[in-house]
Image 1 (tube, rainbow, N blue to C red):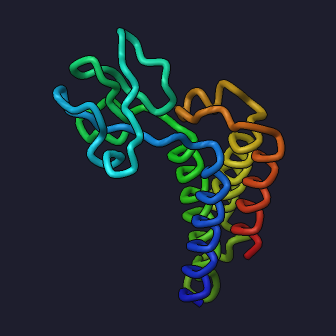
Image 2: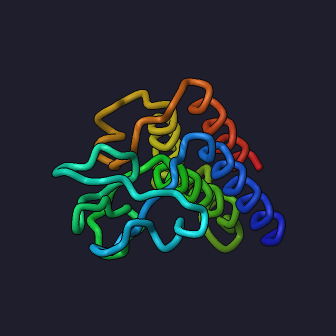
Length: 167
């Protein structure tokens, strides 16, 4: 059912996001005259000072001597662990949804006889798994994905993607 698919995809997305939390540092969105980010001001998280190229995680550049986060809508795209994981999980959900909702007979060619569609679903799944397990670093670089923090993290994320496909 559609409700069951939705519940599974949301569960997997929230589980994947929870996997990233220990590895994500607070991001800063600063204006030239602000010492603290508006989002982190109440918490007292200082924005890092910026002298040239930023080396801070999540920093996409400098503005007025302060790092500007990749959360800044005007900043260039800067990959981070969270957006890499969300990309992998949502793409997996799209592939699984397409496979699960394909009607087949009597309205269309059965999936196992539709070689083009079946091949596309298999190749898409294998590419997602390869990117998740970082089997081909060039693939991850092409997809602009960040490096996963550990082998355990990669395996846990792969298990979520596999559950999405069989679920």
